Length: 259
Image (tube, rainbow, N blue to C red; front, side, top):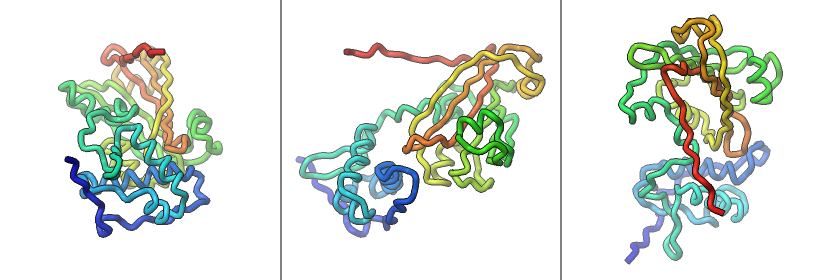
């Protein structure tokens, strides 16, 4: 017999009324707010989420908008709904979303028994380069926050990452990126990254990259360029990662789609 657990009113956190002038679609804004609620200890422990009508009234949106956000979270395996019982956070979640594989490089390596070392870390305001301007859709000459890191293991640098962050995030320059990058962005700005576009190119190490990665100028490197988008499909980060191909390999696993 399924025990019916209701969400006591005193467990429902204060919900802000949404600013309809915000460029993010309403269902995406609702999804962001629901993720914040879902992270609260009481809901992780099994308390029922507020029903659609309650949330719609509290947010000042239609019930259909809330239902759309619920549906997306259920498709991602984050929520479960049972007729006559209600909706709660999944308690047996074993798989992350499609971005899980690049959410934390250090954790991924730790699972392989590799301890990642940090050789360089620089976080500063800088004029966006041409690639960042084009990808993030900002004006040329705009100064935005840039994060440069060199990481590796066994005393040898393996990759250099340069991340450019959209000014829409409202970063202050005080963010601590010793934690996984996207967890920091979500906790500091409330922006949840949803998907990414990846490009791979073979390049030669220039003088600067050769110095950072302890290789000879002209040595082949793998360049991975990726753009990260929020729930409204707006770019929030553009990054270029240079890998020493003789020290690291990227793999892709593909499955045949069933008609």
